[in-house]
Image 1 (cartoon, rainbow, N blue to C red):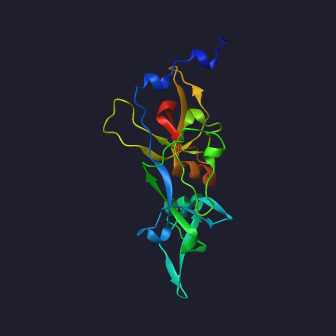
Image 2 (spheres, helix red, strand yellow):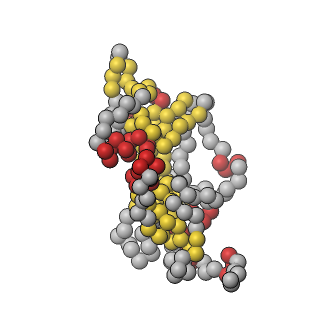
Image 3 (cartoon, rainbow, N blue to C red):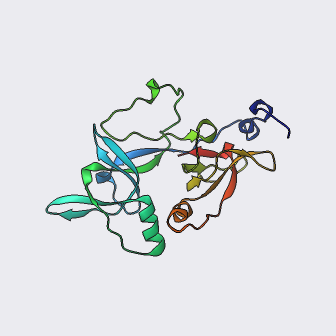
Length: 207
């Protein structure tokens, strides 16, 4: 077997073009200012205490003059949507719910030291995109596939999950296999193997 080191591999980011395409990051906004909540990714929690992610929400309901948001773990939400079944969703006070939205102002940090990562506990922090090559342990993480350097009109592809770590493909590219998020969750509740696709790492970002 021929041995090689990472230094022997080409710089795929440079081969992809001199201008790196960076997907928009994720910011969290209070659910009360969002008109349509159904199906949105959400975070619940309490300032100064902590946050719970990987949730989906439905439109608010009012009970006893107080507004609540139905909240489900993502796997249960995907299963209910895929199988068209009714599920019980706990109700969370509106003021304890934030929803995700993409924002081009949320950019990768220039520094990766612990000081640059400090956040306020007043609200859930934004999620800047991270290069797959910079993240250890990407299997199961949400990823964004950006268009190649020659695809000027292409759009970012979201709702994907990584199902492998980076590997050297038959063509010599450093790749990660990904699948649609609904298939990732279906794999968990039914055991059905998802359809996956091979994507070069220079086109993938962790969301």
